[in-house]
Image 1 (cartoon, rainbow, N blue to C red):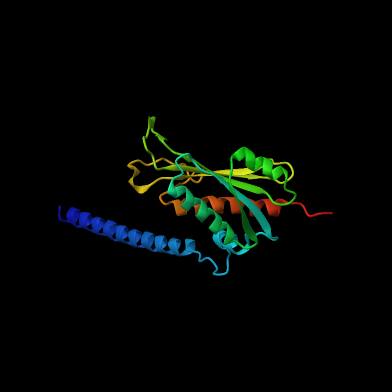
Image 2: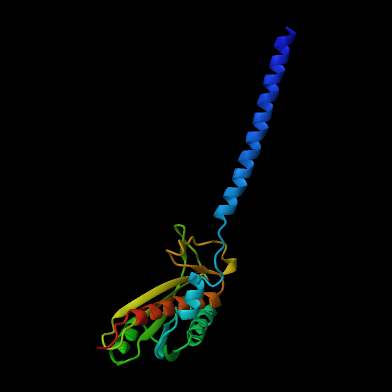
Length: 213
């Protein structure tokens, strides 16, 4: 019986040593694997943001004839959002906004037909009073939409929409951004968002334009 117990103890000790050794080897192997996957990115590798900010600009001077269509209430936030829209566009290189005043969308399209070079942009405002199947009385929220009409033809070339939702509205519109329309909590941000969206389209359209033969 003594020999049997000694053999059992020796076997158990051998198994313990093998277990500790295998665990240490596995840990070392895991650390080496982490080092192999941690490949540093070169400092001078351009990212999507750096490419957009450094190269996205209009190659030629562009004049935009800008109009607006307010709601019947004509909220103060409409003026703030429109002013922010124009200011943001004027801040871009080779962009200048020329005011047309207040008019309807159909009038903006008709005005574009009389132009030979400059497109016409109109910013329209609507009260956003519908949410979750209910109508919100005296809503201060806005749907801000822009349209760009081509000179000569008056054809609508692009449009975009931004929701302005006041902080104290007590509701939150669900947005599918970036696939849907964004929600902004200040009228200034709403105007900037709309302007940046339009500018991105202008840059894209200029890049896609075929050079003259």
